[in-house]
Amino acid sequence: MTIKLFRSPMPQGAQRIAVTAVAVFAGMFGSHAPAAAEDLQVSAAGLGELRPAVHLTSASGWMNDPQRPFFRDGRWHLYYLYNEDYPNGNGTEWYHVTSTDLVHWFDEGVAIHKYTLGDGDIQSGSAVIDVDNTAGFGAGAIVAVATQQLNAVQTQSLFYSTDGGYTFAQYAGNPVLRSPVEGADFRDPKITWDAEHSRWLMLISEPHKVGFYTSTNLRQWNYLSGFVRDDLGIMECPELFRMAVDGDPSRTTWVLATGANGFNYGMNSGYAYWTGSWDGTNFHPDQAEPQWLDNGSDFYAAITWTDPRQAAEEQLRTRYAIGWTNNWDYARRLPASEWGGSHLSLVREVHLRDIDGRLTLTSRPVDAVNALEGAQARTEQLLIGHGETWAVPQPTSPAYRLRASIAQDLSNPAKEVRLKLKTDGTHFVTVGYDFATQTAFMVRDQDAIADQLTEVYRHGRTIRVRPRNGVIDLDVIVDRSSVEMFVNGDEHALSAVAYGANGITAEAFDGLAIIQSMSVTELAPAPPVRQP
Image (cartoon, rainbow, N blue to C red; front, side, top):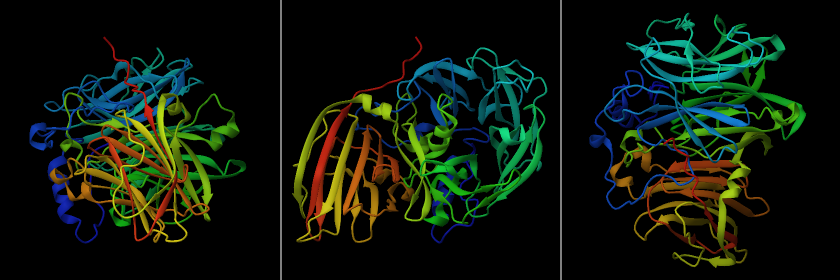
């Protein structure tokens, strides 16, 4: 992934933000020439330990885009883009981690190194298990196709592993695909096996287009078609998959998804998607306007996958997702120490549901997160009104899970309920629900670093969601430097990096509300097991 913000027409007022973002980040990926971190990062004074307790971080340096994992020999194998030389050196490479439960991770080191394998550094791509030896490197070989960039030229290169994905060799015939337009954006290949046509299908990010390519051997590729948009900037990290609607394998639809610039739709960057049909050549969306898997500020370059241990019907029902919890507008300005300040989201379980007549991707944390839960504080039937109250459960650990079911008091119904998280009485992050507009929201314009960051950082995020039987359910994972909120179970998500203390308050406006139940549960730390 490279930084190409605001390439599409911008709404009124966005130009100033765009200029700032491009000035700060131009070349981070592309030329990979970072500016001095001390000139960009906000002051971390008084913030204490910032490394997340239950999210995946690198031991040091820089991390961004996750690469779609595969399952082999009882373990998930995930790669992410990594720059050990950050903030003083250039380029990314593929760092390898493994897991048995998608919550606890083990460092395996760099699997594909930058600047040692031909055409430059190693950017986003995808790895597949070549079960039938279509590429000729042996049955079961791991074959990765990734973008390499040298002298601002992006090409697609192939690497293969015969030891289960721990080390990769370079294909002698690289690059396997060059850009059809010299010097244009051409990156993030996402490969899947198209069983219906006995071929590999690859999606690539091109200028204002997702390109579709096919191959029988992973080495020679032919152009098939393109999905063109001029309102979302450069569509990055695209993917195409089929899912069952409401768990019914007899009713399926296709989903095309991509990282996108959503300023034309009241978003910033995020994971955009369309439901529709795929005829083997072209994707036909049900409607022009994209939807978003997460309406927060910090869920980008996300990827999804299925569990090969599950039956085919279950793979249509359930996918898994992980994203980069960051935003290019301020990624290099966040407070950090040796680990660079970036982390990945929790892994989520994803379904496709018909919600109020619209096909919608939903997500919630994987069940394995429950194993981290410990001591719990709980309250029920708490009446709240105007004026903050601390009479709600308080966290006792740096990472915790807050669950709340909130309704209006029928005799004097409140219009809005706010929960202040990470509050010390001065700085805080606000989550809550506006009953008047049926909108869930997350705002961090008063957190511990907001006044040092951009307008994009301070802008609140919202999502329209209806109460169920008059009740709104919030499930919020809070870590040292992020908040992930899931509304009404898995209907909608809002995620953001956020900084502050460890307190919680509650308040209702223009009436009274009832917290029918609220719990705060400790989450045990789950740091990656590092190599000695």
